[in-house]
Amino acid sequence: MTNFISANDKCLKQTDCQEPSCSAIEKVIDAREKDLGGFSVRRVLPFAKQKMVGPWIFFDHMGPADFPPAEGINVRPHPHINLATVTYTFEGEIWHRDSLGNSEAIQPGDINLMVAGKGITHSERTAAEKLKTGQKLNGLQLWLALPEQQEEVEPAFYHYDANDIPQVDVEGVPVRVMIGEAYGITSPVKQFADTLYVEARLSKDQKLILPQAEERAIYVVKGQLEIAGQMIQAYQMAILSTDQNIEIQATKDSFITVMGGEKLGTRHIYWNFVSSQEARIEEAKEKWRNGEFAKVPGDEKEFIPLPEDSI
Image (cartoon, rainbow, N blue to C red; front, top):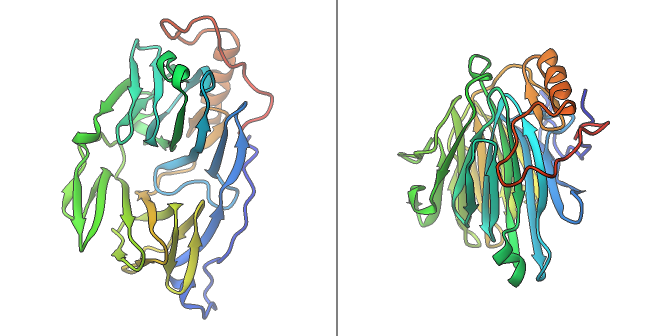
């Protein structure tokens, strides 16, 4: 159903592998640039050989981008089903509106959690004030697959202010626990499956032991890491093993995210639709073609047509 992104595997976990990095790293995925219509993102997941990491099924790095005045993000209304989106920025602002009537500016450090459940429509744009001045934008757009028994929950929206996200100092490394539990603290962000998501900023030569999860990966937003003798560069994701305490070391000043959680069953993905049932995706496609999804109040005139090809 889906045209998955290609990328280069750097180290595949094999029983006869003698390299020390192979015991810690199963594979490395290079982000691929994708044009979303005047705005470029770096897409990591889904990937042909790594469709999910725990419940995480989609990972886009937005930017870094420098928008001059009168230019910005202009993602027209589009639908989702059976998933939850996680959006936040390191720098810059995104204006979220959805069919539940929510209108929220995502500021740096905030987390927007939008639960599509049985169906939701939303748009992401640059607000008029930011269009006047221009802005730099850098952030992440992530999707969580929902457990099968919760795929058809009522749609919902949760906004968490940056000050609500807990922080902890781990031997000199500042860490924010975005979702789930790590380093003895728990995020207030709502979970559906057991989920891990943290970010950390390491100065050159600093080390950090990563939290455990059934499945886990690390993405380098900026800088460079060494993991068991292997270098992981900016815009690369390392899929990690789970049978050991993995320690990373920054070889440059680095900004990283660690993601993972419990392994879910097979999920099908087409465009903005994710589901455990292919028939449910076909139903959603037909519903969008027929204009049967709810409209976004204040943003009813435009929409993104159903594409012939998926992501």
